[in-house]
Image (cartoon, rainbow over all chains, first blue to last red; front, side):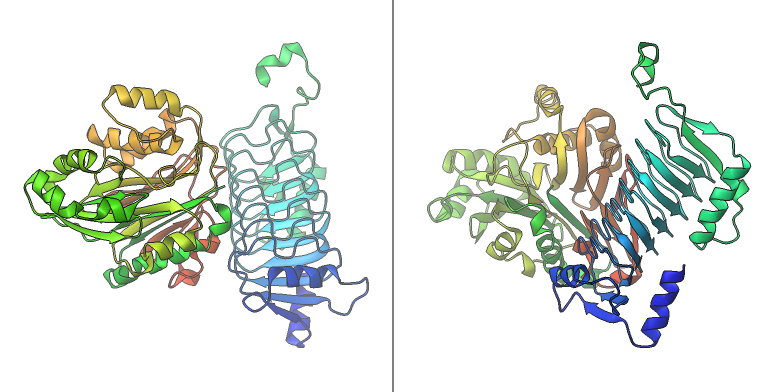
Length: 243
Length: 298
């Protein structure tokens, strides 16, 4: 990940702006991030002592890198638009909700609805994600190294969800055009979600996402693809049992 | 919302700090529920002594001389220690039922929060900080405890509507969520002899567990039963004399984080509640699975 590499380099050079949440309020941090003007030289940030705080680095709209040292609570990095945010810990519910662009890397686990409604960018969860991962995703790419919980990709509209481990119950319930790739076993598929053929373009797509997410030693051909049977788009009385 | 916490100590060296640790955990979740707060602490159980925690809106009036009057009524020695609106009565274990009955006559306005060999329960309207200070919870010692800060949805903001709910000896429960079939379950439990103090949905969950355990189930089996018999949203944390359990409904939308080290097992609605526990950076931290029972016993 180029952005993360940049952040490390800058920190080593002593250029990262360090924000200790045991000394400064969350509001001060987020306001400082929101004040960043295009082309600002403050491109590397480090956040210390998050201790489960909510809404850390929400609404950042500049291409800076932010390293959060520790675990965060609800809604970390929500609405991210262009920043490269790394959480060196686990994340509470709603991490990266409605991300527009940029990248978010969670070194630990993520709680419920990671990447919900995300419109773009890349969310990487190096541990497990729990229930409702990628719910209503609308263009985001999500790569989970571990497992995902139940009701993931519920009503997912577009984008790609790549899971190296297993998926819980009701994967892709009422899915639209998002593509789901799972390497392990799927507990059950939700309404209107079916297994589909892995064609060469899908292998290429998954390989690209694995590369972007820094995953090595895993072949794109090991994944199965799931997507919409497209029977529930419009109400049809013959499909009433499927709802 | 609501915030719930639980702490089950494995290391005896931490027991003097149980009240302080649990208080810290609960106060950190104050913004999840400002209406009322409560805590149940399990001290070392005693075979020779039972404790009854009582509450009164007018403690000066109701608690004065009560120990002597109660001792006379039940014919055995009674001690009474007042803490603000609550008091802990200590007496012989085989006189608990007699004491409960006598209390109804002697002081019809007081409420019984809970009883048992180990548990003491303190709950009031107000923020966790105020409730913890009022009852000096930080100085309490014990083996395990649970706590709750409430954002009311299903019944009124009153002392009796606060959690934990205790419906059996040394049993209590805190709940984040809301039950939708509590009226029906309450009717069934009343038919089986259970009694209720409030209209609250959580009291039904507590009574359900007490009822199952009275029918011979262990804590784990009773918790397993909630998954099929209770409808609604719930994360429950439960205490018994020597045990501590957690269960979430199959949808699991109410948050939960757990941590375990060689010294303790801890539960919090959020990770925030766990950040000040000793050794948390190296603890095993995980989100309890939906529809899965977790329990520990001493």
